[in-house]
Length: 122
Picture 1: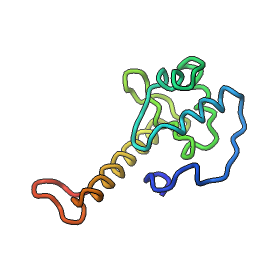
Picture 2: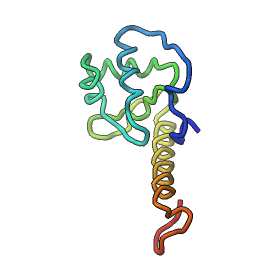
Picture 3: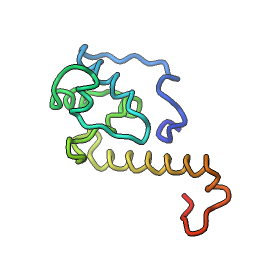
Picture 4: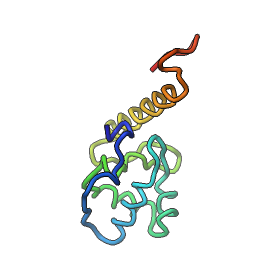
């Protein structure tokens, strides 16, 4: 349910241990909306500190990758870049979020229950 966006990290009690910079990057990463991505450059701009490379190093030390969704952070040109569990896992998580987002939209608009001619129902 966490990966589907139905459960939010703020509903969990947890404590992250890291440097002040890591904590700031991790905190900003948790603000990236479900199903969306940002670049490392955008992440450090939002956090107000550091370089894209330093942010990547902080995310590489992320102890809770599903709670602190570092898979949502991409290279500046939209490329999939490093992920502690492997780029293939990062790609899978992003595809899963996109599928869940599309499913939620379909459910909200009624397409999932009733279907729309010519459209595939997820």
